[in-house]
Structure formats: C-alpha cells, structure tokens
Image (cartoon, rainbow, N blue to C red; front, side):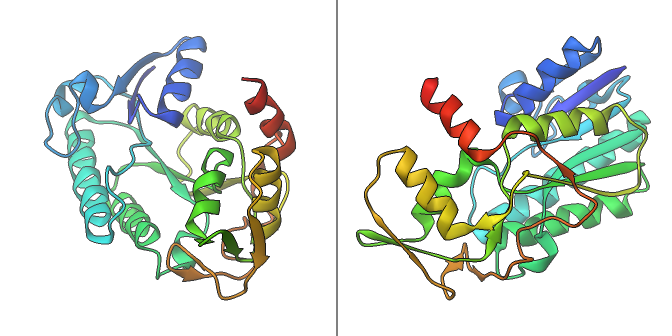
Length: 250
C-alpha cells in the first residue's frame, strides 16, 4: 500500500514513516524539505499519484491566530483537492482532544476548521484526536510563567507520549476509514499544576507552582473536561514518570 505522510519529517511524521515502512508499506515522507508543499502545491500531484492513504500530521509554522487558521485551511483544501483527483481512498488527520471545547484558543479553532473541510470533502476519512504530548509539557509550563513563579490551572489534563500517538496513528492508517473521530489519550489524568510540578522536579527547576483556577491555557480558562478524553478513548501505555526517566537517560 502506498501511504503519503504530510509532515513526514516532523516529530510524529518521522516516527510514523518508520513504523509503516517496517510493516512493509511504500511510504512517502512528504514535506517542503522533500519537495512536497501543501501550501504552494509544489510536488503535490506527483506525491498523490498511486496513493492509497494520505496522513496529515503537518504543523503550522506560526501559531498566531490568523496565520495558523490560514495554514490549516489552505493546506487542507490543497491536499483534499489533490487526493480527489488521484482517487485516494482514505484521508487520516491528526487533531487534538477538546478542539471544539475551547473557542478562545486560536490553534484549536484552526483545527476545527480543518476537521470541517475534511468532513465535507467526500473522501473517506478518520480523524484521530490526541491529547497533549509529554514533549510539550515544558512549553505548557512556561506558558503559565509569571515572573519567577508558575500560576497553572488545576484543571485535569491527560497527556501522552508521542510514541503512543504514533502507534495509534499507524493502526488507524492501516484500518478502514471510520468517517468519524477516534480519541487517544494518556493513561493518567491529573491536574495541570501537579503535572508541571513533576516536570519541574525532574528538570531540577526550583520555581514555585501555584494553582490558579483563572489561569488561561493559551487563551482559555479550563475545566476538567476541556483537555481530557471521553470514556471510549484508546489509552497509551507510557506513563509520564517512565517517559521522564527515559528522557533523562537519553
């Protein structure tokens, strides 16, 4: 089976390409660095030629509200048009748990727009919504920083390892389209302020963490359902402490 991975040189894409190749598939890692650009359409038609599945794990180069919306809308329209012309049978896109619950978050709004385009395209599809990655916890912690302290929301979060995201993605790619949404999440939900404390202890960062119910997560005030998955979600196997231990070893 020929599989095109858009964003194939990134954190998730590069791991996904490796797994799918190990399983014996013809996989194209498509990104601007390999001559395939979903914004300019450079190399897009050639990449789609003979493709059975297209997986979109591309990320926007800018997280400014309008820029990220423009990126996902333009990229998705170009991809879906090229897929329709090539007869692609399954479009898989990586999205985020809670995208439709946080309208004040510009990145989440952009992902909702992307999802709507996919659903309206007529191409069989599967949306895989994942919770936040362990690899992003440092950035999440810093987003709450005020001076020498971190004022973090105590709302629940259910983060996961990127390796577990990739494992779920690979299974979705090789299965039939569900024409709907699948959720994948970490094995443990915990308050964000506690997650940040664990991360700071592991990285020997002595800043004080304060629980603040009014702290905004990239523009949004959270509740316990904002960033956690539903009861039918697939759960990853890697716990945060184990990931931290592995990361420190590496």
